[in-house]
Amino acid sequence: MNKSFSISFVLILYCSIVFAQNNINSYKYILVPKQFEFQKSEDQYQLNSLTKFLFNRAGYNVLFTNEQYPSDLAENNCLALKVVVNNNSSMLTTKLNIDLYDCNNNIVFSTKVGRSREKDFKKSYQEAIRLTFVELEKLNYKYDNNEVSTTKNEIEVKEVISTPKKVQTPKIKKEVAVKEVVLEPVSNDTISVKEKKEVQVKVLKTKNNKLLKSKEKSIAKTIEGKFIFDNWGVSTIYKKGTNYTATGGDENFEFATIYKTSKPTIFIIKWVAYKQPQLLEMDSEGNLMIDAKNSIKTFKRVN
Image 1 (cartoon, rainbow, N blue to C red):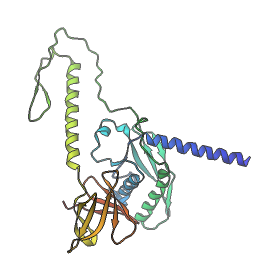
Image 2 (tube, rainbow, N blue to C red):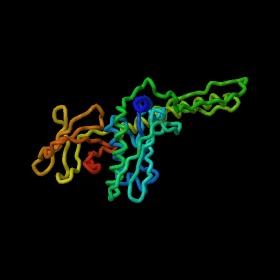
Image 3 (cartoon, rainbow, N blue to C red):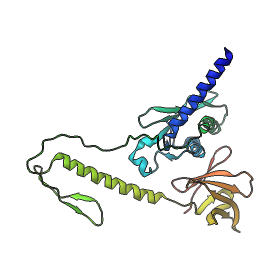
Image 4 (cartoon, rainbow, N blue to C red):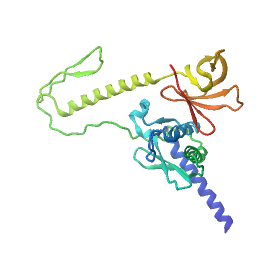
């Protein structure tokens, strides 16, 4: 009896993990807000930065909700899951768990509660959030675009009207400097409402696509440049062979080597003074974030 129950329990647990993994694999992006509902300020205790970093480390494609979205996500927000961190802490224990919501506000996955009894608030919150990721990392996330939701944010004009007797094709001209469609005034009795809306929708999509491309270019940065590295002061990262080198101090000492990964914003940094390499992430502003032992260290970009 006990043996049968144990086997059944293991099978149920295995099936639930496989089902959760398949669900998560259907989504290309994870969206992390800069401020959770229980926080008093943005990135309080560096909890949001740590959450984003831990999702990245587990292999997910992560964005802050206020970052510029890639073109496919801008067209279809159902490609992403939004992170909600729930705080059920008591007087002596910090208790957090993560819910992942889809574009229809349904919970796709919910982690177990991570608990910490640290007295320092920052250490306590960060320890609790790290414990919730034990479960997420076991899912071995890998995006499967064959299972992605096909629901898109499309603008549709659905209005049935009677066809006017005389319809005049709207004259369209191109402004070379602006490169957008402009309609010349046309009498209301010579063009249908449906045709007006269709043209307006095309103009709107054209503007949005151009704004999106221009913003993507403006935030694109390389890891090469000058940064403020603690005791080294203003230091320089430059390309050396296939990787990068960080130099600083009066004698331009090479204090770290930075290795590329498959993701353009994720790197591995190996300090000369330490044996253990660390994960390094470049944010949308070009600053560098490193997962230190107890917190996320941020090194500001100078140029």
